[in-house]
Amino acid sequence: MNTLLLGQSDLRVTPICLGTMTFGEQVAEADAHAILDRSLERGVNFIDTAEMYAVPARAETYGATESIIGRWFAQRPGARGKIVLATKVAGPSRGMPWVREGKGMTAADIVASCDASLKRLQTDVIDLYQIHWPERHVPAFGALYYDPAKETSQTPIHEQLEALAGLVKAGKVRHIGLSNETPYGVHEFVRLAEAHGLPRVASVQNPYCLINRSWENGLDETCHRLNVALLAYSPLAFGLLTGKFDQHAPTDPGAPQGARIARYESVRKQRWGRPEALAASRRYNQLARDHGLTPTQMALAFCYTKWQVASTIIGVTSAAQLDEDLDAWGTQLSPELLAQIDAMRWELRDPGQ
Image (cartoon, rainbow, N blue to C red; front, top):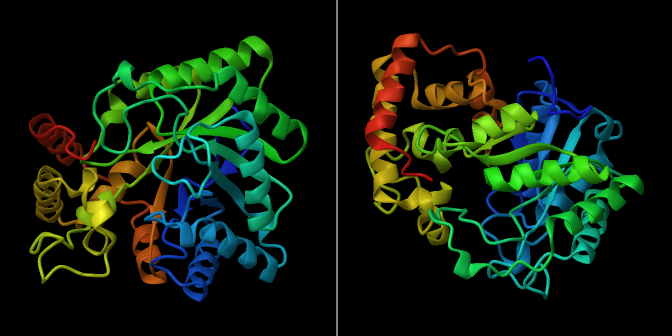
């Protein structure tokens, strides 16, 4: 894999990024370290985490993932210099009072969260510091519609940018990014940054996969014209696009009980637990088999080869899963297959949105 520049930043990242939200919940520390070792050995230089992780979020595991990565850095001299490290400041609480006491995300919250992440990660600088979800009210994590009546925003985007600029100036952060954003949000962050000489967002981390192509409903043009990179998360739709639930639904006794969507009711209550998401995934998985591919190969190749995607974030619970996901790199989808995928999307739309 060659590296690429992330947006207008000077960060050179691999087109595959290791997501780590399973570390500290599904994945024990020793296994997480083995996955990190294997990822680095195979040439992946990009790691993404968040202060909120592990997932599902619990007070007992808040910050656990960053701490696991921090201890990995401490035990592997030289590893930090080989890694582009991304983490995130949590947005408004969303029912997680252990993240912060207030309901919003103030400038002081941003600074405090960054300092805490630096300590847990045992590093002096975060290469890409992202806002995990907007401070203002937006439809995200399965919500479909914007409702102005639910707006509770207290910290203007300009104020958020100034706080992030302070972190950059202090040398704690190299570049900034967004996550779970909308076209309005991306435009406003870029507009204000350019108008006031503040840091420009390098990337947006949003869901993108066969059953959630909502990125292509406006954000693709926004980010292309503004040169803001997409970091695609959930390319396998929490396992639905691997084929592991084609015979047995996540709640069936025959389903693999170690998988996130089977193991955690909180996950099933979100977009990936919709019956329509499972039905659509089964259709795509069979299409992959009809073309001589595994469901995982087709789903990942779809993201790996899309012009819209800068880097695809893969989340794994074992080194074997990591190898399978990395081995899919280089898989090409024929024009015929891509046309069939588009035809299926026209019929099924985005049940994982």
